Structure formats: C-alpha cells, structure tokens
Length: 317
Image 1 (cartoon, helix red, strand yellow):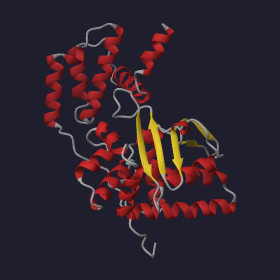
Image 2 (cartoon, one colour; image 1 turned 60 degrees about the horizontal axis):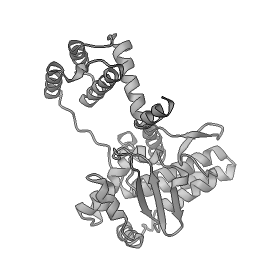
Image 3 (cartoon, rainbow, N blue to C red; image 1 turned 45 degrees about the horizontal axis):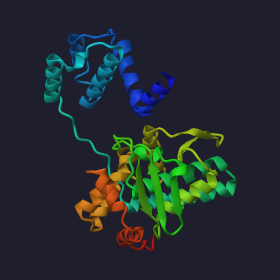
Image 4 (cartoon, rainbow, N blue to C red; image 1 turned 90 degrees about the horizontal axis):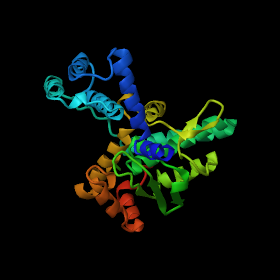
C-alpha cells in the first residue's frame, strides 16, 4: 500500500489537504459535531455559520466532510436534498460581496522598485546581509509577479531547476502544478526582459545574492538570514506586499494583495492597447491552453509588445 498511498497523496495539492484537515477539525472541535454525520447535522452546521462565513468557505467545509465520509466508507450526508436546499437558502439570504484587490499601477510599481533598490544599496553599505536577501527577494517577487501576472500560488511554486533566465532575452518557467492545472500536466510560462523594471534582471539578481541552485525560488528568510528549504506560503505574500508597499510610500497599502499584481498587469495591458483576447490569453483568465499557444509565439515579438507599452521612464523618477 505504500506506493499506492504515495500516488493518492500526490493527487491532492498540499493546500487542499491542509484546508480539508482544518475544516474537519472545525466541525468536530469548534462546533462539537460528531462524525459520521447525518444530513440534519450538516444542515444545522451550515445554519450556525451562515451569517459569519462566506458561501465559498461553507462549500469548502462541505467538500471536506464529503471527502471524509467517502474515505471512511460512510454515506455522504452533504449531497442530500435537505443540505442542498439549506445551502441555496444561505446563498439567497447572504449573497457573496464582490471584493477585489486594488490593481497596482505602473507608476506605483516604479516607486516600489526604486525604494527597494535604495534599501538594497543601504543594506550593502552597512553590511546587512539579512536585509539584502529579503529586499532582493521581494523586488524579484513584485516585478515577476506583475509582468507575468502570476497568482500567489504560482509565485511560490516556482523552482530554481525549472527556470531558465537569459539577460536581455527573457525568462522561461515550468510550473509542475498551479491552481488552474487540474490535470496536473504542468505548464510553461514566458516573460520577456525589459529595458526598465525588468523581471529577468531582478530574478537573476536574487539568484546571485541568495546562491540558490535548486528548490523553491522564493523561500522564507529568518531574522538571522537563514533561508528555509520550503517555499513561502501563498497567504504570506499578502502581509509581505502590504508592508512593502506601505514602506515604499504607496497610499492605502492595506487595500492591496498578491492579486493586485495580476490585476495591475491586466489594467496596464488594456491601457497599452492589448486587445481583450490576447490579454486574457497571457494572463490566463479564460483558458490556459490558449494562453500556452500564445506564449509559444517568438519571444522577440512578445518583448516588443511589452516595450511598446512600457515607454520611457519619466525624467523625474
């Protein structure tokens, strides 16, 4: 069973396993629910948190309960007419509020990059290796996250051995798994080198400063400058970016998240004349297969497309 268990475990994303375990713990320990559960119990559980939890959270809890019952050989109580009707009622009474992260504008990206570079120079001058590591990593995250329009899970799932970066040309990265890669086939992304705010140069600088040769590209760094062997957690990017933006002087930094990089790129692309089809293909908001076909185009053309919208840097910045 050892090899079989390995394959079964590999079928689930680590974040899914953790979230399902947390959901079962919440049902049993926080709400004091008994397992196996009845449909009536599940319905009452939903009602108990209908006004305080998002519908998406409740659906995730139901999925976790369904998985637990299936794995333990019990009938699934979450698929009964009663539970379905209660959930529909919750959706009707508590519709989800659309709340989107504020997009990061290009001038704000420039401001953040300039601040990070100034802080890097100061860290080098005073010999603060820990600060230099953190600042260099953070600049790479924000520039690559913006220009590649990555989701947070895509940023943290990058591995050094799967990235090829060439100065003045571009960066190619293969991700073994991502949120939209349900078939776990892996995907390859491209990002061009740019004349300013270059994600390729920022990535190579991080690799040079950190000395990383394998493993996760972006890892945690403790107060003594020790780099973790594990990747950063996707949710850790939100407070990291907000603090970075605040320290760089970006107003209302609390309104930004890791998704601000993705939305910011999309807004920049639209303003730069990209049509909706090519923008959605590159960002991956509709169909990742079409995005891959687009990115398989010659990288020289992709670089020219970016530069046409990047323009000259203002003289006073």
